Image (cartoon, rainbow, N blue to C red):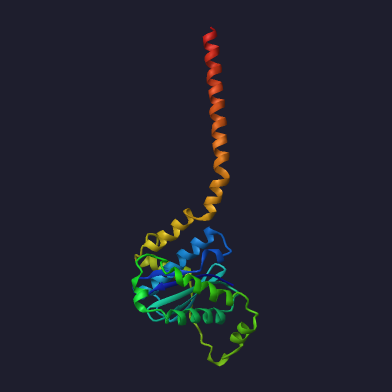
Length: 225
């Protein structure tokens, strides 16, 4: 299935939109890890290190599929078994929606993931491609077989190695910092904090009372002499 989508601007490699968080079934740590990888792919595309209009990048048991448009790039993370042809139909649909957006709007964003309105577009199209067995998706898979092209494939580890070789700072970009910050501001950690904070406070109080009791007992023993 399509797990994560990122829409970015090619001029500076800034991610503008993504899959709405409530539609992602995987946990926050998984999301942040693969979002960071997608941001790196976007940055490499924006700098010209990756130039193919369509490309598939293998990472773990997943694939990044990328489609370069007019000033923008759409990247989707899918399970390895998900049909590549269907993934690119999905990216093409997103690209066509982006073409309807005034370029001045695309260029106006100053912060990563600021194009919140397009998140809902991403979510709506993603829902159409979750089930590969729908009549519409089966038609897309079986049509235009003669026009299928051999899309280049690359390993993510090679891209990462090339970044390190070229001296690119992989870990300090503003977008990666944003992805890491998402972990610490996540709903998951809020739940953990709500669950464990009272327990931690009770344990600390018990330790303090126990320690106080020991000290007072020793004091009473000494004064008894």
